[in-house]
Image (cartoon, rainbow, N blue to C red; front, side, top):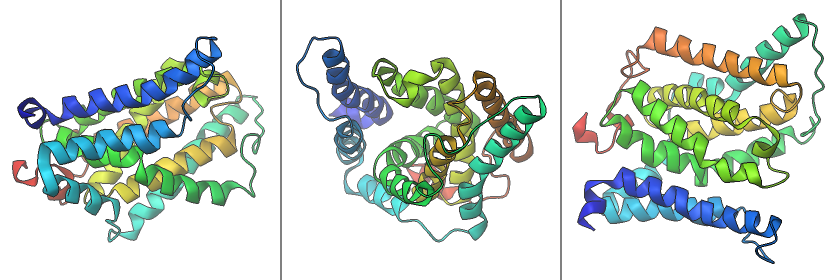
Length: 274
C-alpha cells in the first residue's frame, strides 16, 4: 500500500493494462481454440479500466482523489470555443487529408463503416462511453499526474505511446479496428491525438468531458469518413495531417503547457504541485 501511494501512476498503468488484457486475452484464446468461451470484450472498458482508475485513485489518494476524478467528468463550464474545437477538429483534419488524397488522384467512399443517419447516435453514445471509461482513465487520472512531473509535451508523448500500445491485443481479435490497420500507424495516430487532447484538456481547466467529446468525435469521424480504413495511402496521409496539427500546437502554444496564457491550476494533480 505504501508503494502504491508513492507510485500511483505505475500502479494505474499496470492494472490498466493487466485487467483489460485479461479480458481480451480470453477472446484471443477462443479464436486460437484454447478456450471455448470469452469474457465479453466491453468489460475490458466498463470493468477493467474503471477498476484500475477508481481503485488506484481511492487507494492512493482516498476521497480527495476520487472527488477530483468525478469533478473532472462533469466540468462543463468552459469557453464554448473548446466545445467547438473538440467536436469539429477531427472532421477538419479528415477533410484536409481526404482533400489532399483526392487532389493526388485517389478516391474515397464515405459512410462505409458508419452511415450519415447513424452518425449523431454514435457520437452521443461514444461521448457517454468514453466519459465513463477511457477518458476518465487517460485524461482524468493519468494526464494530471504526468503533468505534475513533466512538461505537457513529455506527458502527452508518454501517455500517447502507452495509450496506443494498450490496444495491442485487439490486433489479434478478428473484426476489431486495430486488426484491419497497420498497428505502428495506429500508435503514431494515438500519440498525435494525445498531444491534441492535452491541448484541449489544458484549455478547459482539465475537463474530461471535453476530452470525451474530442475522442468521440475522432472515432465517429474516422468511421464515417473511411479515412483510416480505406486506402492505405489515405491512412498514412491522415496520420501525417494529425502530426502537422500536433506540431503546430506545440510550436504556437509552447511545449511546456500547450496553453500559453491558460489557467493551469486544475490540469495537474495534486494541484499544490503546480
